[in-house]
Image 1 (cartoon, rainbow, N blue to C red):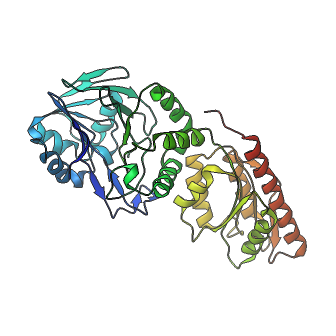
Image 2 (cartoon, rainbow, N blue to C red; image 1 turned 135 degrees about the vertical axis):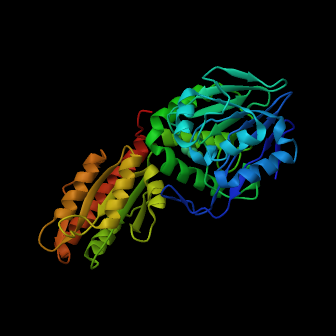
Length: 401
Ligand code: FEO
């Protein structure tokens, strides 16, 4: 289906209702791969879709134009969710590919590009379509080194590729046609799980496009922003600056419930007015949701018993995932039970240190079952976490973008 953004601009992408995994990210509400057609005297397609939706894209274009009439295809980023249909689209249209040198390098890694006509663009370059002009800003690491965004000078639409996206399949294409809390929840989940690692470069990208007058932000996933542009820009400002919320997370894996008992006492200690406390059994809460919780939580306790002289596997997997995403500006501690050696808790603490999480106290360990003394230490540890979270939120600790 072709969806009009302005009289010369339309959405021609694909809705992937059933995708539930995106390189390890649980896409619980599906996703979309957004491609856009801009028509002047000449026509340009901005990005494509996953390869298996190539026919959908060409059919959507066909509602308003013969695909043969497409003169240019802009590839803002080479990842296959946006470039998968590129070989078929270039074959069907005979269009010239507009991209940057790094992106062509990515595309050469995935496809046989030998017959393609390519023109390179970089920041500040403009493509004149006759009545519509596209300009380009390179935004490396949002999401790969090859990433760039495209801006239409006349309609003031920013085609932001991965930035400001959400994995959200919906019948509405715009922010005002879809429930805003759902959209913002997915925008936050997307930021945390896809680009949290690149906060510094996203801040630079925000600066680079900050002077543009923007009527719409048309990302490559999810809904198009037209009524809530200040809302999403404000949220990104908070996320790139790691603005903390007075929130304590207690995330654990347990074997015979001893670590769970400790976790529950930490929660008891942390609960107070003005501090949000959340308890998660890592075997039930998915890593995607936990990474999202980590984005703005000020303090976190990770718990695991010792198993085979290390921590348990689900919490280890979560920490590996989080280490890659590099949440910043947190404090935390490690806890858990053991039979004869607190190796799991020591290893947890080493992981916190590797992630540059400020460690608030030595690991809390209980042998077999936590006794009253250990449970008292857990409550005290909860108070420590809540104090930290309360202060961090009140003082507005921010990281340097
Ligand atoms: Fe949506 Fe980095 O691709």
